[in-house]
Length: 163
Image (cartoon, rainbow, N blue to C red; front, side, top):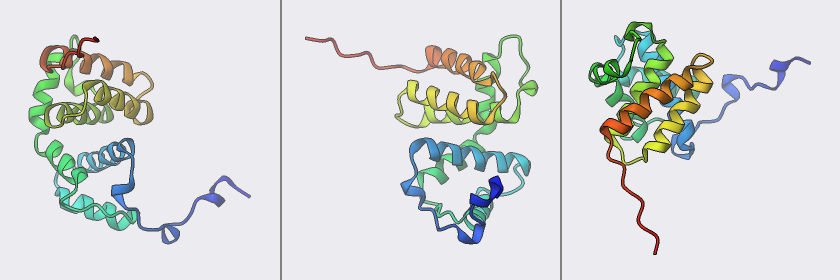
């Protein structure tokens, strides 16, 4: 018996309802979609990439879903997001960042700009993605970049005074 005996084959998988995934799993899936777009040098449309994932992994990602909207938004605004990242890279060149680090930073910045998700949650999720998909200590780097961005650009609501 080998390790791979317990892994189901693709034809044994059941369709995955994207709506049932946790927010963390949704972010991981978005990361994978962005990575596929990057691997194809953005010559494939978001529609084509999502269709490929839907068929290949028996997913059910609709064009109306938040997941699709976020993925498409990050891809369409990647150059703008990169211009936000560059000034935050003290003594570091953008072209030296790994693909995973760039994608995670783009995702987090997009989410900070376009959703009402608390910055602490966005940062924590970016750190967790980095721990899973980026280099060993990339999560520390990502935390520093996002922390600086939040301090400079995100108005965090103050906690209400206790009575």
